[in-house]
Length: 169
Image 1 (cartoon, one colour):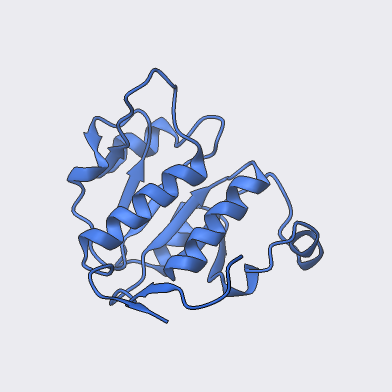
Image 2 (tube, rainbow, N blue to C red):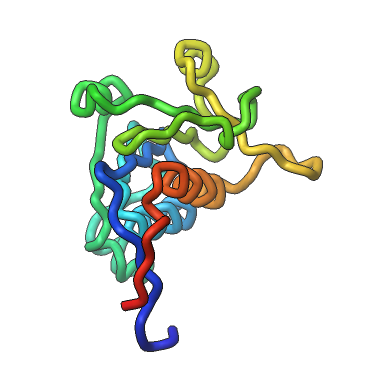
């Protein structure tokens, strides 16, 4: 990695919360964790994980940025909601009919993504007003989870003005 100053932006008033429901693939969650560390977004892992996140597993995977991740575990989405009642939920699904570019992001919102194999449960999608999709130009079924999170988090940061003021330090 090149040494020297890096381009930085100011922190948002309240960080976004990235919520992964039952993530299954360790490298995806590792990439999401890195995005969360880079954007000061909390990472909330909900439900059963398809891998371990103990210190030995994280060290073996070479996730040297893991100490920078604001990590939280929740038994289920209700547990997350009870701990963050003011966080508005934005659900992201390839089944969404509205573009994430139309989302009304606010600092402190929860950006919720489903597991890699099946996404978010239909019942959850039907119960929430903010369900967004990332439009694609090609015929792929969906984007990779970690790519989707990065796209959405940076758009949310841009939208709330967190990327407007940058410094080279």
